[in-house]
Image (cartoon, rainbow, N blue to C red; front, side, top):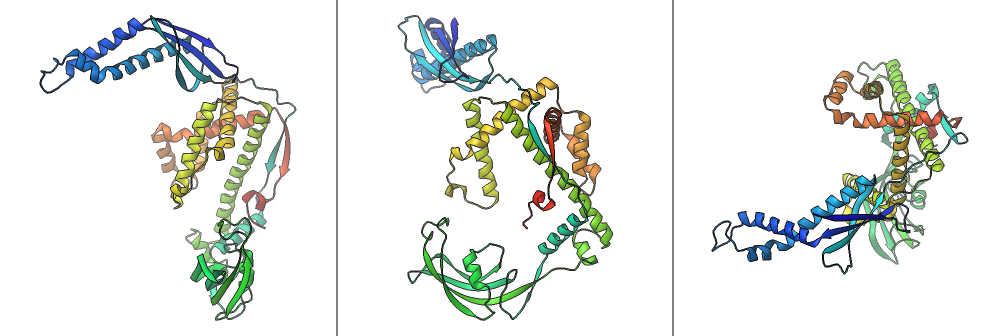
Length: 438
């Protein structure tokens, strides 16, 4: 089929290209006829023998399909030849637009699409990157033990006024303008004072009450409260305190060590295992921090125009991930309509970084080495009871190593950048790194 293709660059986007495509009508009609003949050979219709259905009926039933298929194949072939000859890297799916033409022998189309940007990496000599540092010490182990004890706290019933950190059980009814409002009732409702599960004004009203005591109080919901019907509104709560429980932390003894998986209850082994786990977690978090700082530096030093088609595709992916995450948490996704703009900045950042990092890897041969991948797999396997079995499982199928290969490449890029920028080492506090509340 005779075709012609020209490429133009519209002014509205530096990444957009337009390829004009021209098809010979006679050749297109010939292709359509051949397709209809092939369809007719297998077409069955009451009153006709197989393969003997009149051509007119075949065309009536399959003519539009045959034309669409012929056009699609011809345009796809032309476009492929055009982008290959001009060495264009197409981003996303081209948009085919018909063109008006006075020609009696040809039909005209335009294929509009975006191309990947040309990435030029800029010098990083004057760029500064902060590298966080932290050595795990005895006090960090102690604070971790405190957290582990708090996670296993028990509550002992007491007959005294409730205080912060106590767990209370109450009945309550909330009223607005003298009438109970939706969601304002609870029976035998338990919560820990000071954990923020309830609004602070509500918790403050409960503090100081004793088991068996009833109380009424007024409070005003915050203006930014999630329920529009209650935001900024004054209400009255009637509460009845059922129980007050005082927190009792488990002792640091052999029984506690056994709850952490130390079979013989040895406290020295317990601390050693906690230290090992902490060092592994701290290393991972420090690497994540410095990686984030490096990626920020690469983005700032290498502005890049991103194809909108890639951004839209990434937004769809991020929305799907968010939906799956919410469903796993038991939320009803249909009740929360998502807006693409919520994910636009994240999508743009991810695509920009992917383009820049890909260029860094290609130009500097920073692909993952087998030894790197193996070290990462073995390190990850150490947290399991039978590390060698875990390693064998990963190596049983090549695709299981994909995440480790990506991690190795990312680490190579980070090291490459750190070797070229001004690195500012900064000690970070253990609690801050681990996201612990003070």
